[in-house]
Length: 124
Image (cartoon, rainbow, N blue to C red; front, top):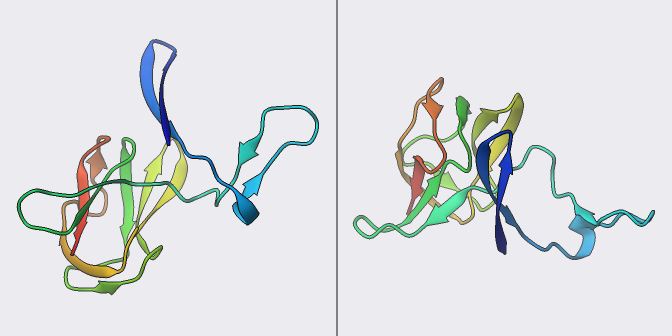
């Protein structure tokens, strides 16, 4: 994965680009730059390993508003299961689980405004 910093209208954005191959990748055939499409509403969440309580922490990939939360503390979840919907720039982004596990904690509530990097959910 490659990280880029883009400045647009005097705002700085950090962008991560991941190469996708196989059925999920779609390349433009008219000489334009290649594009990849996974699902238009899926957003890759920021994931990190916390130092204190174990498990996996999923952070907000961008600032936005929490529209809905599909998981509860204690729920058994599967990889790629939708955990919540984050609305950003008038688009609904599914925040999905990167692993199988159990929801240990949820750091936001429906209707909350969040900044990029805020802990959304912890999976153990």
